[in-house]
Length: 329
Image: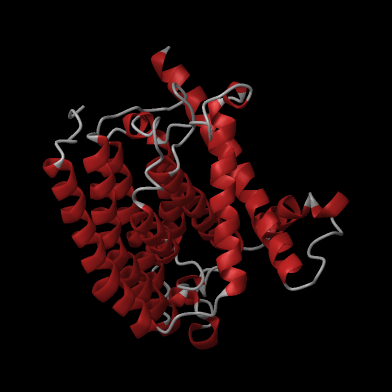
C-alpha cells in the first residue's frame, strides 16, 4: 500500500511537471516574440496552445540516428540520465505545508547532490558523440556547472544559518515573519544569476554557443534523444526557480498573512512565485548578449565566490553577535 501511494504521489508531481515544461517552451516563445515585436506560435490550436504537443510528437516520431563513430551505449544513456536526474530532484520540493513526496532533513544536500550529478549526462553525451564540437560543449558545461555550484553552496549555507535547518519545509516556515530575499538580497541576486549559469541559460549558454560550437553537447542528437535533453534543461530551470522560491521568497507562504489573501491555497502561491522566476529566465534570454567564456569564469571564481563566502561570515557574525542563532532542527 505504501509503495502504491508513493507511486501515485510521484505521478502527481511528474505528469504536471512534464506538462509545465511543455507549456514553458510556449511561454518562452510568446514572451520573446512580444519583446521582439513578433506574434510567436499562433497556428496550431488557438493562440498556439497545442504547439508544444505538436513539437513533442514531431520529435518522438522522427527516426533516431546513431552516429557510426559514436559510443552507442553511452550515447543512448546520456539523455536518459539527464532527464531522470531533472525529475528525481523534485522528490524533496515542498509545494505546500504537507504536499511533499519525501520531507527529509537533508533536503538541501539532496538537491545539491542531484544538481552535481547532472554534469555527468552532459559529459557523457559530449564524449560519446565522438565529435569535437560536442566534446568542447560538454567540457564547457562541466567547467561552468562546477564553478557556479561552489558559490551556490556558500549562498545556501547563508540561508541555512538563518533557518537553522536543511529541511526545505522548515526553511519555508522560518520565513513566516520575513522572507529571506529582503535581508539577504545580495545573496538572492547572486543565487539567481548562478542559477542561470548552472542551467546553461542566457547570458551564460556557452555550452550551446551556436556561433562557434554548432549546437554544443547535443549536436549529434535528434528525435527522442534531443527531446529528452530539451525536457531535462527546461525541468532544471523550473527546479532552480522552485529552489529560489523556497530559499528566498517564502515558498508556499502568502505575500501578506491577512484575509482574504491567506485563503488562497499554498501550492497556488508557490506556482505563482515559480512562474515569476520562469519569466525572469526568459527575459534574461531576450535582454542580454552572451558572456565571453573568460568573463563567465571570472564572474564565478573572482566575484561570486569571495562575495558569497564573505556573506556567510558576515551572517554568522551577526547571528552570534546579537544572539539570534536559531534552534537547530
